[in-house]
Length: 450
Image 1 (cartoon, rainbow, N blue to C red):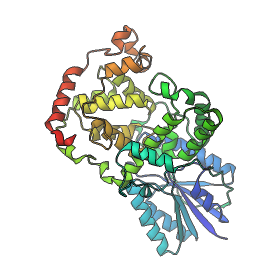
Image 2 (cartoon, rainbow, N blue to C red):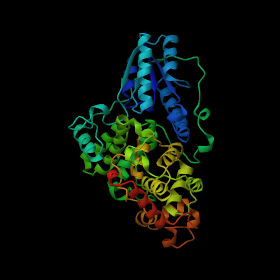
Image 3 (tube, rainbow, N blue to C red):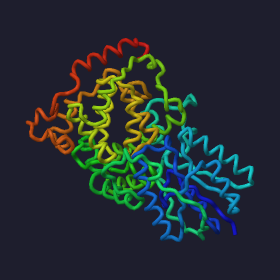
Image 4 (cartoon, helix red, strand yellow):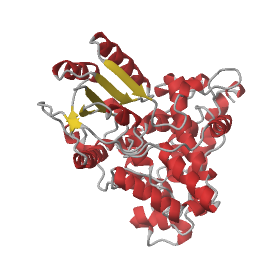
């Protein structure tokens, strides 16, 4: 009997899983998950991972499968399993981060030397092959809108794969690991979203039927429950972007509801992965190298206040406290908090990116890097240098009653609305003075930057 090994990665689901479907054609299956190294997954996300794997394991058991969660280096662990259990073929779905991409190539070489068939599948993106979507000059897109138009023209909502029929599971006699052995207890959120494939599809169903019609007008209001809440599920691969796109397209054809504002956000995630794939240097460097001379400062006391949500700036602190307690933060508030750190406190975007990476349950390396550089002004398709989010005006526009602020900063509840939207205690900086200083720093770099 032929034996296949399937390696789960950022695809912790059964439906619309091309690698798992292909592996199920063999008579016997070994199903494994290898815990990522610390730099490959943020600290808070490990606790979401633990719940996700528990649910995946239950779902597999219901179909006669058996998930083995292991610790080790894929390039050595998987070949050893192939040799020990006489595996004929190894399957996985591709990931596009630089280290993952290198890992796949090294693993393929090792397995080919053993005479083992290897097959990987494009996954986790709408545009399944980032290398193939290029502009008219056969160069990668650098600006979002042309990328968006090209992708929308190319992509169609094809039918997604159903849950495959699993074959005989091969038991492994190995010590298994757990996420708690690897995750950092200091960064564990107090509240976690309900994770798992079934939860992801329930949220998609609720979003499409109750929120999608109002998404355009309410998505920027942090107090409103108006977003899809699918980002943690996408980050772990509990649902594919193809499934989301297909479901939205179906409801559009049935009801005529405008889905483009939401699809645009889905494609922005896609754009981030695309940029990281083509320009891997942005992991550690500015996309715009002219920004390398920017005079960042090191303000440890300011940084700590920002991290703990005690800057005195109401909207910023509300977002940072939400992040600390739930591992999540509303997207509008993420932009405000990031702008405050980089442009008001003049602290390097990499410091903020690292904090979000370890604090977010929905942490996605490409999205995190691209969004932080976008806000800082040094990234691809970046916000103009003079666009500095004013947290007071942002609160007035998107949280006019202070409902979101009071939810996370109870100290503000006793204050008049006009005051709670700004500060609830003595702030660590003067917003207007720091804005002027930030503009001067940008001007010092010279016009060629812009």
